[in-house]
Image 1 (tube, each protein chain N blue to C red):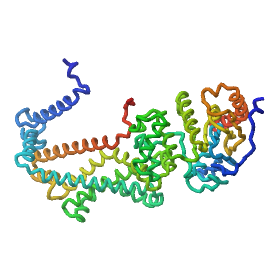
Image 2 (image 1 turned 180 degrees about the horizontal axis):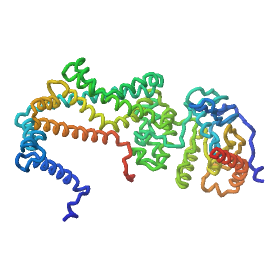
Image 3 (image 1 turned 120 degrees about the horizontal axis):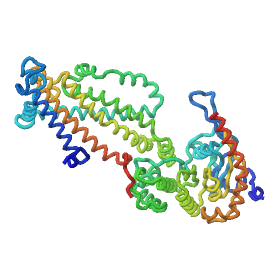
Image 4 (image 1 turned 180 degrees about the vertical axis):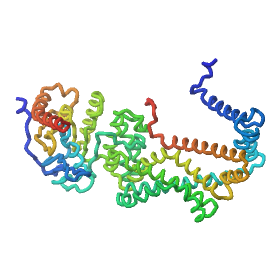
Amino acid sequence: MWQMIKPRAATMRAWQLGLLVLLFLFWDAMTRPGFIPPFMFDNDRQAAFFFGQPLAIFERIWAWFVTDADIYRHLTVTLMETAMAFAIGACSGLAGGLWLALSPTASALLEPYIKAFNAMPRIVLAPIFSVWFGLGMGSKVALGVTLVFFIVFFNVYQGVKEVSPVVLANARMLGASQRQLLRHVYLPSATSWVFSSLHTSVGLAFVGAVVGEYLGSSQGVGYLILQAEGTFDINTVMAGILVLTAFALALDGLVGRIEKRLMKWQPKVGEVEKL
Amino acid sequence: MPASAAEVVGSRSPGAQPAALTLSGVACTFVSKDAPGQRYTAVENVDLHIGAGEFVSVVGPTGCGKSTLLNMAAGLLAPSAGSVAVFGEPLTALNRRAGYMFQTESLMPWRTALANVSAGLEFRGTPLKEATALAQEWLARVGLAGFGDRYPHQMSGGMRKRASLAQTLVLDPDIILMDEPFSALDIQTRQLMENEVLQLWQAKRKAVLFITHDLDEAIAMSDRVVVMSAGPASYPMGEFVIDIPRPRDVAEIKSTPRFRELHAGIWDVLRGEVLKGYQQQLQKVA
């Protein structure tokens, strides 16, 4: 029997799901008033107050998505902010990385500034962005951009610096002009580096959006969480966190899909030559 | 007897038309970026000319600056002294009339074999359709007809070399520069490729400058073999005309008496340099 169901590649999904169910059961058991005698708190309702209750959380999520259907507005805002922060940050990072990597003078001149901006804890810029761009989407996008830009920038910079000199010389001998080199050698090489950082940068764009909302906004999932915290509604806070996590996972999966599609020229580990 | 059989040719014998490639008094010194005082002269006093349609090999011990020579001929590297001329015109930028086949992997990994072969044509503004058709034709010629949609990492080393060969030759360059193109291949694949290159060359008769450390390969393929001295500051020590009739088969030719005579003669000159080069490397380590 054990041989049939023991964890292996085929049954791994089931095991992963089982672990999740187990986790929620444990959570529920620990927080259900009167189920086990309180050993940390004074009375048996406090565990539920501090940690929330899975059933109440799922009810909340159900209400958000089905009965009240009022989360879509907030989710759309958060996802739009994420997408815009990512798009703007990645494009400017790509352009900046290419420019600095190909222009030694500019790179030498700007190097200390780049380092300083990167070392700066950029989350603290959020209040300033709120002043500059208002409480709407602009300030969240700006925060996300500052987070994404540097990830992409450094990866592109590295990618261009590490273009194989032989491939480069070969392309030049084949007659590539400076522009063609950029288009056919530097850019594809840099994109592979961008993609290797994409998982991180999409995640950071999401972080930028949520943290921005959390610090001051009138809509978005971060705003929902902030509101619930104001009334000590732990169940709603937890529900918000779960929804955010699910969407972060979905985004990551989407990036993986796109990466697989565009990076098919890259050798995968363990891929055997198919004849 | 073997030494006298290999005829040492005079420094140059230019014909009526300008040579495809002429290196006169060329030197190349590398300066260390970190310590400007440290310099290394790879080659010095190099006079070399390759006639149109001539197949010339350069052999020499490791580290004698053979690749440096080739990079200067390609215009990738400017000589510290002396000059390079292509069909009588001094070379100032990249050598547009030359195709270069590199020693290491040079295919663009993000392009399929077909796209790699057609790359040069695309760069030169050939319409995509035409370029693809021509590339397809060349892939077939190097025996990769069904492999056009493969990415470099999906091909074997030999297949990648064939693709590189097609990539270089599809542009129909007047001068072909080859830097130990087959050194990474196993002996069987290598002989196949050598014969293929010879056949292609026979049909088109382009000037070839072929760098190798393998004397057998050099003699089997060339019209002329140039022996470089051990580095640093190496120079061409001797030139040998290979008068074995063509067409040749690189595997069969190696058992002919003339081949062995030539081999012995050139090896006489080369051996001392190889030992010298080896000794220098030992001293560097010590």
